[in-house]
Each structure stands twice: as C-alpha cells, then as structure tokens.
Image 1 (tube, one colour):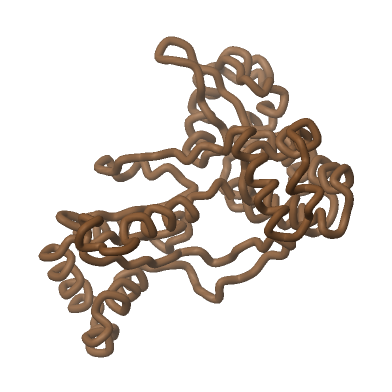
Image 2 (tube, one colour; image 1 turned 180 degrees about the vertical axis):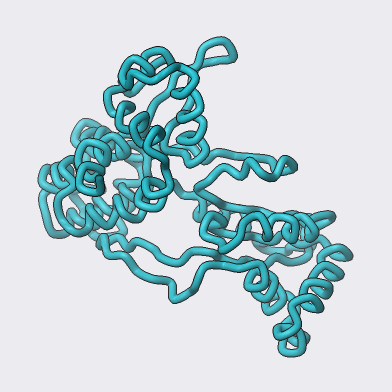
Length: 307
C-alpha cells in the first residue's frame, strides 16, 4: 500500500511519453504482474484472477507483449520462448517491469532468468520484500508520504470523489488522518472512500480499533502474508515495537521491551526491516528503529485476533 506500483507506472509513463525515440533510452517496454489480489477504495478485496507468477509465466507475458506474431509458436516451448526473448532484449534496449515480485512461485529460480535479460535492457522490479539474494540490484525503499503530501492526496481524492468539504479542509482538520494512517497512500484512499458513508471520526476510530470489514481487509491485504511468514521471535519484537515512540528508539530500548538478548533482537529487526514493517533511522553511528502509524494501529488491535 505504499505506492510501489504507482511509482513504477509513473516511471514508465515518463520514459515513454511523446516521442520515445527522442526522450527514452529504451525502444520498448513490457510489464508483467505477480499480483494475485487487490484492495479497492471501498475496502473490498478483489482477486486478479491470476495464479502466482512462475518463471515460465513471466517469460510468456513478456513474449506476448513484445513479440505478438511469434508468441503462438513459442508459448508451448518455454526454452525457445526464453531464448527468443533474450535475443530480442540483448539486441534492443527494453525496460521490463515485474510488479509484486514477492508473490512468485519460486523466487530463487526466477532471479537468474531475470538477470539473463539485463544489458542493454533494464529490469524494474517492485516487491514488498527486500531482495537480498541478488547483489546486483540497485535498491530504492519507497518511503511513506510526508504529512503535507499525505494531506494533499486526501484533498485531491476528496475532490475527485465529490467530497467538497474534504477538498477544502485545512491541515488542522485533516491532521488526525495522518496521525492515524501515516503516509500510507492505500490507507488514505480507503479513509476517503469510507467518508462517503461515515463521519471522519468514525472512520478513524474503526481504523484504530480494527472494526468493520473494510478495515479488516486493509490489514489483511497489507500485513497478513508478512505476519504469517514471521517466526515467533520476530513477531514478539514487532509487537514490542508498538511501544516505541514515533521518532524511533535504540536497539537497547527495543531489547528491554522483550527481555531477549541484543543479538537476538538485532537479528529479528533485520528480518522485520527486510519486509518493511520496521524502519531504521539515525546515522552511521547510532540507529533508531520505528514503525509506521498504520502498523501501530494494526499491532494494537488486529494482530491480537490473528494470534
């Protein structure tokens, strides 16, 4: 919900707007998505109709987009399809986008194939999980929106949905939205969507208390896969992070909240940072660990129900 797909789409539009031969270093682009579900602004979970992305599925998706004439002869021959794709993208620079990589069937099998498509072409990957197994990636952690930008999104979305009072509301009136959900764009869109039916105090209270189907779906969509894949030690540390001040706390402070050793806490924090539910601030000499406002609300209410 932090806007990875939106950012990737904006990059593609900027590169291929207008006369691509003059403005883009790439001759063409293709996009495949591993997304199996989405969350609408009404808070309803929507399936994409796709199964988890496989290596063969990724190659087939690129071949169908870039070589539509040859595709019917290649799609039932995975090795030939990959060879044809490699031949094309090695001769002509392309931008290949793989969205939501964390939902692929076998990530370890897919990464070498992705690497074989690079140069002079480039690969743009979005993923909730930090891809530590590939050392040749340039990583860009997408930050949450600052409060001014978050409130600008609230107003813009309110204007688009015809909620005039929201579109013209002042910063003080909207501060509670940012205080509750932070700069998570998906949560902001859900809040605005719910304002068509309920007053703002009720919508924000539902988020804090994890009440109502739209809010439960939001937490499920953002956190369920992450929570289910955490070991008990990482879960304990994440729950302890609910007591950390918004500005973050030191490793020793987090350790004092759990009773575990500093070494164990450090290892758990690395696991939590790899799935982007804990953020690290500070400088080269002192680190401070924190969580988003939305994660705090999730920890106080929803996680108790999941166990």
